[in-house]
Length: 138
Image 1 (cartoon, one colour):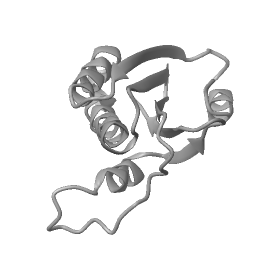
Image 2 (image 1 turned 90 degrees about the horizontal axis):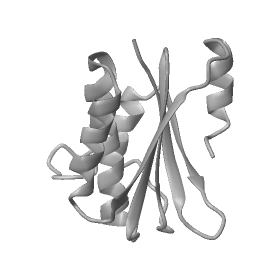
Image 3 (image 1 turned 180 degrees about the horizontal axis):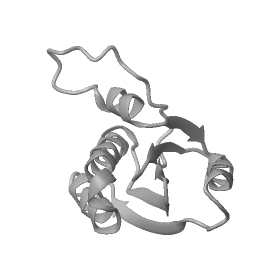
């Protein structure tokens, strides 16, 4: 199920339903690349790079910290905006760090926060979470 924010955004751009694209990836380090490819396959050039970067960061976080055998990716593509969900079965909740410039990791959510119109985390009943974001498109 898509986050309720999707319905609110749809009202602002007409009543055309978004095109939904979904995939399930293994919980291993092959998944970020596969997820980036999926995003680029379904989005236009104007927004694909930012969205692919953001998806890659979230899928990497899900693989490294999610403790899940699978990672689920859902895109809702609409003229003017894209809504993205990355879900895993892990119980830990993402935390934005200070973004130490000397660190080799820990900047993924800073990237999401700087590029997304909105983003958040939805804990799931029975465990797991969905990290979602909304990105404006051309």
